[in-house]
Length: 398
Image 1 (cartoon, helix red, strand yellow):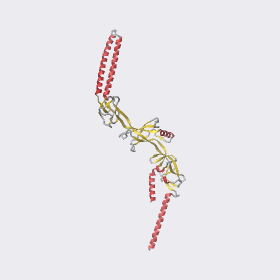
Image 2: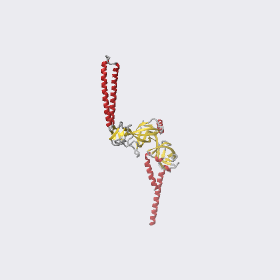
Image 3: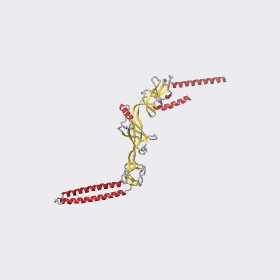
Image 4: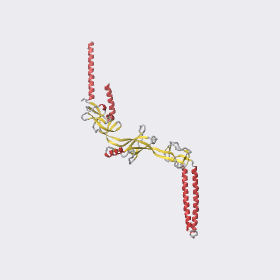
């Protein structure tokens, strides 16, 4: 009885082993394909329209900058603003001692009164001479002299009036005002300082920081290449409406897009670049003048771009290569020329044609001349495909 049981157990083990070997054989056959060729995942090359972008450094500049200077000589009596305060045009920032200016105005008023009195006398004399010149009681020479005295008196009145107007302006200039809307920066003078003695003293600066400019420059060779590509039809233009995205120093994107406001018509001989300027809204004053930022500028679109996943490309110190499955289902190495990265995909400029199949999995372990069975997947499925391949590799190792 024990012998029969032992024989049954041996038979069961043998049967189980045969079934396990058969299952492994089927799994192996499914993995390598019916003709003994390994299965590889590929993407089929096709044209894709992508934006043609360039990333350039730039520097933020205030939209308007006004230096606040003393327009009259005087002693600073008081500072009337908080440094960093947002002010409106016409807001008084400094008050100068007005006493000397008011005295000059009173002097000008007195001078005007004196000249007006002289004019009255000159007119009276002329009227008397007019009555006497007809009967030759007054000579023609004296009459013309009286006329000249009236003209001179009128000129003196006009000069005195201008002097008075100037004195009134000087009294008004004792209140130093903001010339534009903006942020008033730190004060450069303090109470008690003498300003405007020999020149217009710089007292502070007001900067308008909403919106702001971002100045940048692009290499002249890139500008010429872009224009040539547009002329030859390799790129499609954007009708001059560039999409400009700003990247902050911490790497985050600024929420508002900018627009190109100026592009120079000549090349800077020192830097061999073309100077440009973009304008951005800055309601929260997040962009500070003088800060360095980066700009992503979409200048055109490429209607015939070829993209391959990043992991499909192999690089060494001499070239960049990909694995291509030819018409005979055999792997061949192909040298390509790459452009920039578009997301997680390389832009291929030369070396591939639409319809060709590029291997996207285990590119570093492939061997030229290997017979394969290609499995076409979408470019967007690449990440999922990579995860599945890793999982299969782990199970096979187990």
